[in-house]
Length: 118
Image (cartoon, rainbow, N blue to C red):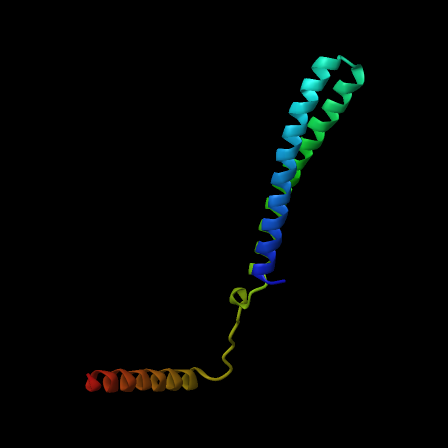
């Protein structure tokens, strides 16, 4: 799944949760008015359920944030930049010293030829 897909899905889900929460708030306000006017015991039970459901939507929104963060962290951990590379030199100390001297001479030659061009 690409980063773009994750972001699009996250944005869509977040938008849906916000819409549900807003509509839930409106419904709660209407139910509260109706419960006051009717004084029916069942009206307050329905109101209580609506408030609970709206609180669950807010919890789901927070879980969505957490899940997005986990997905992004998992994707970053899978990148090759986090790869550990161990090098092992097999040879004598003399061979290693000769190789290092040769590499240093090559660098000096490259640096000198670059400065001569300027």
